[in-house]
Length: 462
Image 1 (cartoon, rainbow, N blue to C red):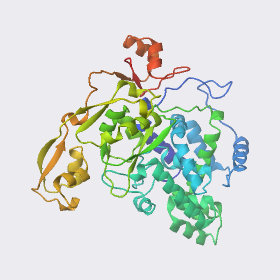
Image 2: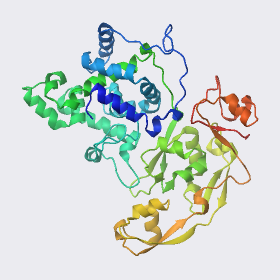
Image 3: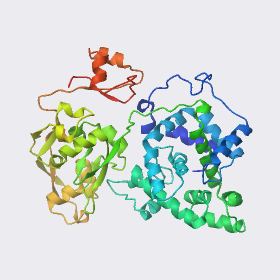
Image 4: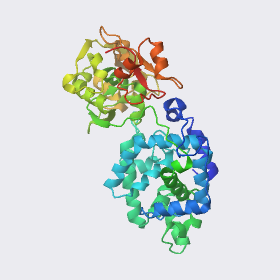
């Protein structure tokens, strides 16, 4: 990506069409002002002396050498004036991702302000893909990702994994700093590669910092650090620009990692613990087909909200049973449950074994994906030594669970409503002929009882 104000503006326009940036996934604008005395639609702008003073204040608190110039000003304008809606959504997504970033950066001794780099790289879109093939929040190319232990396979893309990619980015940035002794030079190398930075240092006759070699860097890298400074500024002074966060409907405060020991589909997990498949995909974008495959080395990780993680722990053993499908009792959707209090009923379902004839050019991964299973399960059922042992005309056994592995609760009908843009709690209550107080109680809504587009509300009694 060429880092100019115009290219950044185009990138943010493109981003707004991405799955996780569509309006239905975020709270509607509140109509409130971020600053007393400002009308909600007012777009403040300041003169150079104000920007200089504010960035100097930020500079006094960081290990970076933050400075203000016309290039930084151009990027500030994009975030604070031209693309305010995108910036408001990024401000909301901070609450999902910044705790992860800060933890990883602290482990490797990288300044916490480096978390703003992910905004420059991906605008906090976990499944961002560049034209060059860089992927994820931290935009790793395949070779660099592989060097730092990020797996890319038919079912897993670790570059999309927020935690693993953050750890890899922190390690990579630390390695670059150890090489150059300057955080801005580390940023330049992160963007354009060490070869370009080394060449720029030679051409500048031994320049020791980013600004000394700036004119000798590739065009895209010349805008990279100014964009980083601008993001640092806007994340700290967004209120002064009358910008409020738009919080995503998938915002969870307490996320836990649980270990998955054997293959599982998102559909089966959803039926067992009551979290939607859509939410599972948002929290775990690394499982590109909604299937957690088998692992011979170590368990895979699954990110779940805390109360769903407790439910998962209670039903985990039965989840792996191919002859049973777990169905949570109606009490299990409450946030206050503990594993000891969960009652789970199971409906026995006998899987059917189908025969499938392998076609020319098909791989085991393709066949597994088409039939909602995994390579490991196909190899186990058919006694295959490796995926490569497949040949055209071969007959495979494929396990199918009736109903695609999803069953309704036995004897209990529970209804949910997905909140649409513009809906209020009162409107939803009238639609289902219940009181607002009951809806709020069933869904643990407190205080101002705020609901968001995309939120799932229970509309039948426990």
